[in-house]
Image (cartoon, rainbow, N blue to C red; front, top):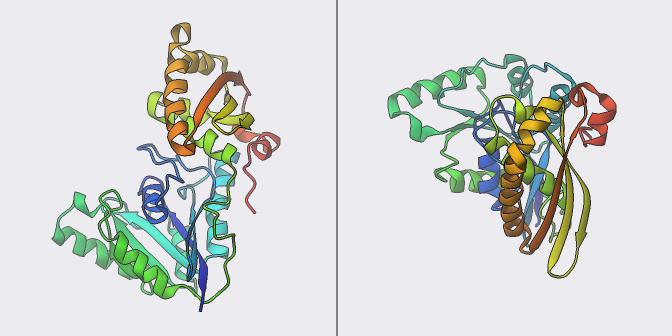
Length: 293
């Protein structure tokens, strides 16, 4: 008997979905930073054993769209409701349970198993946690509720065991040696974007997209050319920094992370270009891969 299924992770921004995904998959598949809207795409991470295949799917945080890119991000999250065998709805100990009630009502009507994960329990006490569990039980009466701390790996093993129990019988959906549905180029752009999220303030990271124009791999070396797109000339100046120092720092940190990720030496060249209002251009969003399927 072989089990296989899609386990999709949804929830509001900044509740720890990507951190949980990385713990479950055991690879740094989703970038996880302290800023909201870090995950912009739906990213699959695949766990294989001889007896089973779990296809985990991390999604952008659910939010009310202010521009076209966020509409695409919400479409990724809603597509995760359509094809899940098991749904993991992630919240935390400070979030208002009724923050995105429309999305929650869609989750409520689902016939598949829903596991509600209350994350960051290391940031509260037992009594407060009990109150949170009661509030969520009233909102999602059919969901199993599991308190966890993804960062500290508390409850993650219990969750994994429960997922395996609920997994349907099925042949594998992907090759048994496959870790993700995304190509190498995707992870290059995500790692560079992670560094930009870490090193620049305010709105800059949200105006940035990274496109890998060249990825040439040999036995010992990967040569990468990447373009950082921003929306305004002033943002270009900030990304590059005085005499190029800011861009050099991002490039150096990205190269180290890429070498760790791919296990090879990396030659990385980065350029900065202005693409005005790309977040509201359907053509540009398609070019950057924002097309939910």
